[in-house]
Length: 194
Image (tube, rainbow, N blue to C red; front, side, top):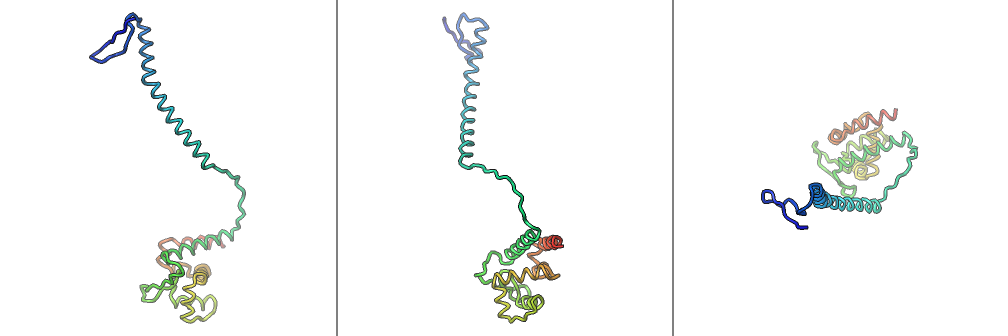
């Protein structure tokens, strides 16, 4: 069988056998097409699929997914309220302390030319006022400064001021209360307590 090249506009169409019928030529062209284009793309896409599948499977093996059955959590309303209070105090302390710790002993001159002290930025007169109001205790300036600088005592005093007086959080911590919406959080806590 002699082979010849059929050209159309100087482009080689395919190699045909000289005596092939139209049907044989059609089958030949379809075969060339399948081998030339479809088979190549199938191999390429198959390779990508295999890589993707292997990546998924090895990733799943490396990071297994553990599913736990949900069991009811017995948290009382009082515990949830305490969590909300702790979050409010933590937000206030973070805002007022601006990333400083108790060991830094923060003392900042406030806009009223008085020193704001500690993580909650208490002023001496504020500590003295609330110690007298809440605990009926007279404290000296030195004791007020020590209370303001002690993280545990300052947190307790701030908690007492916010959650037991009518002043709440907005009167003594105006900027941080407005910045973080602490007044709204306090109102929600009080609604839950009632």
